[in-house]
Length: 402
Image (cartoon, rainbow, N blue to C red; front, top):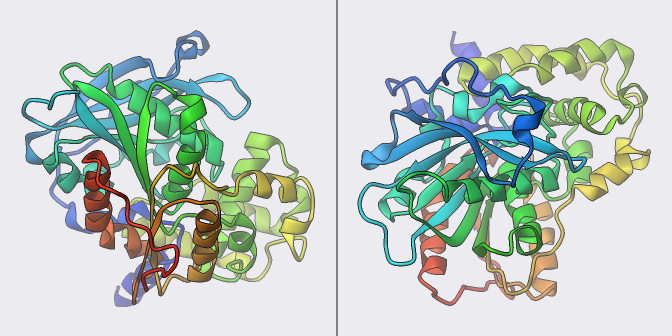
């Protein structure tokens, strides 16, 4: 049993973001499962204004007396089609301030790529929203998308930045329709790992996609910025194999990219197994450890997947670009991260700095990938509070914190 626990711990700290890490403190909390049929939609139900709510239901277990709702709302898919997306909206207790409550859009890390892996369906959904108690204490609405294809019909467009961003922005829109939420037009976005990528793409798209909203800042912990490095330099680790397998499996279904040119036929059963497993608990990580074992012997059919089409172009398309220079950014990074490498994050920060962004970069000694989201949540919430308060954004572009 001790050996299995050590295996689980090792993988939990390597897979891209592992939302399940936060569940350690969640035992005994209320079950968050949805009513039967909540996530199902007919095609015509998805047609409508992005962010409009299809259905919603109350949830138990939100902290500090807050009200919580599971929502199904409209958005736009990878190919421009109308889709339904699920998520959770948490509304603080008490009266709203003049101008309405600020909103924080929480962008979750990797939970899987099939519908049953939706965070809104997880037992410990509130424990996986990093900094939730502090955000509620500040009086912020927290709007947490599942992303497309998690909860709703899949597959999930994994690490597809624009898809994530539209889902993030549209659940902010949806918050305005929740009874008694009294949502204002200002919001910040905060995400970890895959959610860090989602946060950065939200910063890239917000002004054009939702001009009626005011994005005051982007906070990202160990964001997935350089997907080419992520799928090559980490390919020989448990976490890297997990991420690569899920990416190839998802993009084959989402984009029609030929997976047989990328994966050895003998490796496909393991790729299928990993892509149909969720990341919610330590037991899930034990299962994934054994599922990915065959990939240690045989996996990719090419030495460098980033050099062949269409994978090369798709990876480039989903790498985060620079943000509007007037949009403040906070990026936190664990110095001991072996999945999203500190050097990769530092290089992205330098790109932002060169483009004129005001960036606060915080590198935390001894912290690895799985923990940087929770370990920097207090700093992220405080940073967002200053943005909502109109304080000048700090800038460490000349001398990043280490």
